[in-house]
Image 1 (cartoon, helix red, strand yellow):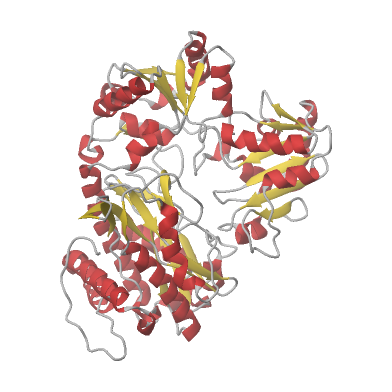
Image 2 (cartoon, rainbow, N blue to C red):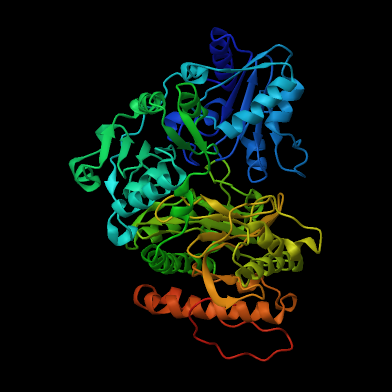
Length: 622
């Protein structure tokens, strides 16, 4: 079907349901970053393949929205003849800045009926949509069935990948322990049950994993955790083999996925108080509770924080996973840095090589996201994904950006390195160095307990801000333990985050700068929050970051004179640690990469300085 035919088919189904408008979010019933092909409704109607966006379809017009990470991609993928292409981020000209709710207020006709599917929107989302519809003089309608699904001819089948146990040697804590801790929290809050609608939370709680969506080892399912430590698990039971049934035990009762609504309704009809996360649960679940006599406890799921604070086994696992991942990335960087090598690679062949090298490592289970392999101007597209139609040789620009990661049984990685593949200009070196300064300032930060990520975001942007430069994405996101590469509730960004950073959290440190049509710069490493072993004047414990990612930062792109003495020391110390951790392993598998690493991690010095002696170090940097 053509894009116009798809819109016509959707509008025909809207007419059948007596609605004048319909909201198509990127999210599906499970609110995940990745969705199975059968639920990628936004991609089907708009052609957009990024992980953040939405479309609004009215009878006579339609609009598409995304954020600053994907604005350039949306211009390329979404047909402007069919959709008004909009950005929710500022300074994205010629793309106008407007939110979906603002667009509704300006474009929805008076007395119109505006429809949403209540299984794919959260209560928080619906509150804003409802307000905008009513400001426009319209009425919000919850449809009984999704009109887009009805319009979607030859819709792909639902995934049938089996669920698998996640062994204790990687999980670090048994499901029984986790369920007991959760049950204690439910008793403290005086609630009968927690409705769990995020598959990552279900997988973490039950110590299971799956393969229903790309790049994240999820088994798509819901669950209800009860105050007696038992769990009702709602999943396509064809995915649950005898090994998993034995693994989860008798206290985890299996149900078909379609029984979730009825089970929730039964609890509500018995007057139970049910905990529901309004930021991630379908509003349909909330309505089932409130309309059937149940009592609603609306609060962030306790599993978010429980999952975010990794236990010692998980921390040790991610340290080891990052060392193996660093070996693979260094071998890749060495391969494309050999004389004349860059001319032999393009974006796709380079990313294929990196995945091939990673796959040779122990415990590898696939990529943690689609590799961003951006040469020249493509590197300026924040979440670019190369395709045969956009693929460019690495030498299409002097700067090549590669943002990649892997899923290992013992940890999840995410790393970005910006590489000089040809002669760079002084401007490029200055911009890279200013991004690096922001990265280092975050990495060196020491902060009191209770600090939220917005306080640290300022450090990441300060050097760029001095010369009027910005980047339209956050500085850091939480990372799971063989789960989602992007997880809550912690983050580092300009907007206020009410969740303080705490020891055991794993988070990214990734400032950047993007010159449209020319080049992109991002330097990203994962860090874990640690106790610095000191207290501030008020007696609060001081926290710091230990850098987990072990991979060289391209010295050819750094202007040392722009670094402070502390920043230069941090860089040289970091490279010394990278060398000490990776070199013994590289010596065994790739002698050329070992020689590359020695040069790539040699100490930098300012023009007036003498060469310092390299130091072998361990631990984190303060």
